[in-house]
Image (tube, rainbow over all chains, first blue to last red; front, side, top):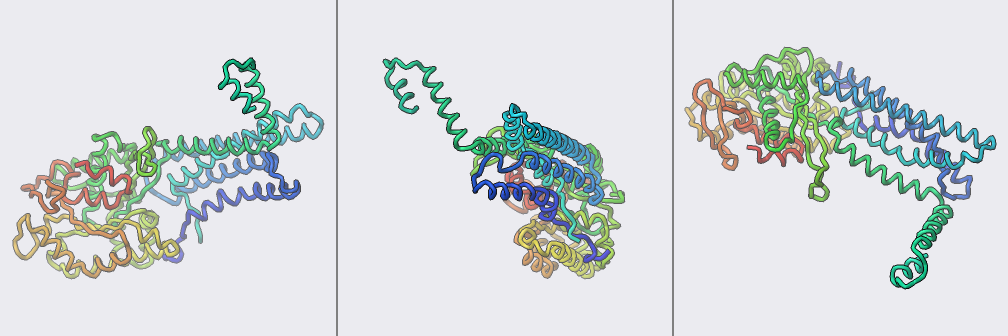
Length: 155
Length: 349
């Protein structure tokens, strides 16, 4: 395998593919709602269900990247394997929580649209929760990337 | 509302009860939140969550920051001995304050076996794996903000130093054609934070030393060019990547020199090496702002770190009692380790 044929790997590319691109629907949706509401920025400018779904997918992507990482770097290190298993479990856990939040947000929205106005308060609380805790998986993803040096292949 | 509270606290004779003030304050706060929008609350909660989770995860030892050190060298250049000495040096911090931990059982096993074998005079056990093995040490570093350490808050580094079988080194150094870059170790080494090139000092002054110096110089210069080529779009970090050429077995170098030299003539050995490897050193020095070169020996002990070449020759086949106290190990470790760890380990000895 020549040097040119050797796949070059980049941290920036990994961040773009696994974190930035999946997050794009959130700002797009926010901008559209902002324009539709006369530039009034409110809590419902962003959709909690979209945020939850996006982070669920990001956690799955990172999990997949972690599993593939072992094949690219053939080092033998028992402690690394333990840490990798832990990180995979963490990402799976975050993904499940995110998907549950997504399902709950969508169900609440559907019920409110069908006249269950008493759920508005519960919906608001859930949305505030989703908007508040999403930095936790973000920090975990950054820590995992830094710890296992996850990179995307450029070639 | 403010007037109400001020009246209550500044004038105790007021007849307004405190509960009324609290109720009014709460209704005023509720009015602000509802009028200005919940996004203020969401933003504040989000910020607090971000700060909290960053602080929590920063101190989590199970996801430490990775720092890789690649060791490149010909067979029997003393790579494994050097790795063991550096790991032993980092580990000594453990006894000084519990900062370094070896969590990898395989690292502990190999390290113990190799150190015992080296101190017994047999040299390190042969590296026979098919692929790279990374010695791993986890080091806890206190979190500092503007130069001041925050009590109770730490973050972790995992230092990985790659070791690999000598046969792959032959492919890497002698054949530096296309095939050598397909070796698993080179792919691992490309993504490293710091590089150590190990050169046998004894062979640099023995028979066929001219040929040996030429081959070593061209092989390592070529290897560094390949590494830089891999990172061609990332020039600045590579310019700042620590790169250390280590002349191992300085005691053998002293014995091989034409004139019999004493221990105090290590500076003369240094001058001879600088002259012999002048081309390689000057080129690597241009291409890395953190380039340096050092002399290492497991038979020489450093007594005084301030005076560079003061030491003692250990008689016969007996090594220095502790690998971490061998000549050059402290300086080499501090050159290739992250700045936060290097500053901590500086006073270990």
